[in-house]
Image 1 (cartoon, rainbow, N blue to C red):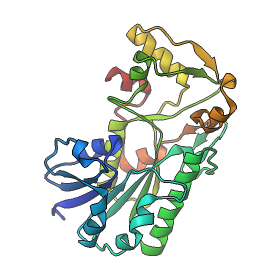
Image 2 (image 1 turned 90 degrees about the vertical axis):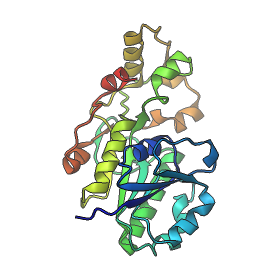
Image 3 (image 1 turned 180 degrees about the horizontal axis):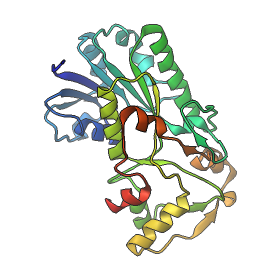
Image 4 (image 1 turned 45 degrees about the horizontal axis):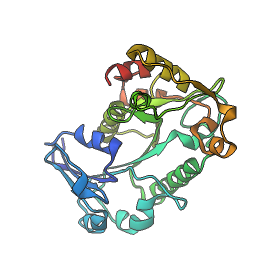
Length: 283
């Protein structure tokens, strides 16, 4: 059994990736996280070192990384890490795992039907188009250079300090209602656990949906939170009354339910927060 210390590079140490990093054992992983504002990030784990992105090339040249997590959103040209560090990446010979955090907006609109990892990808928003381009770039690298890549399509992320309850209390949310609309979401702690499992368990599949068991409408979530916390329910707004340009790029343009059966099967995983109800009880 290989018990040597693993070395993980997190490209873009942010909300989700910080939970992933803190979920890893400090006696198994040494972690380097990149940020443009490294002085503003505080970490608890003594094995996490935050560095400026300008140092990534030097890190890659050392050829001692065993794991890489990419969590920086792509731009119109695709993945930023590939654009800047592709030729240094493919020379790394000790890499065991590379995880790319994508999003379920790559599926586009499926009229409320369930979408698995083999469903057609037809993104409608610019963010979704950028994500799909980046995914394909990573899959090309996997095919051409045998890099052990896992792509994770994340549903709407929520958790402490990033959730609808806070937005309701701060009067920052609009209670938009669209008949027959479904959204999938996932608690950040479940994401962290799944990523940790994927770093330990070898699987053939290279794309995974990460979403909880209970797709629902935005209004349903808002109503539940308000009723549980004795908060006035914000006035409902008809989706079709929204400005046309805002409708086009809003997440309401995608109507789908995300199938999570593959991640459950491959990692023998049971969600700690199978629906928003369990998730918001802990917030």
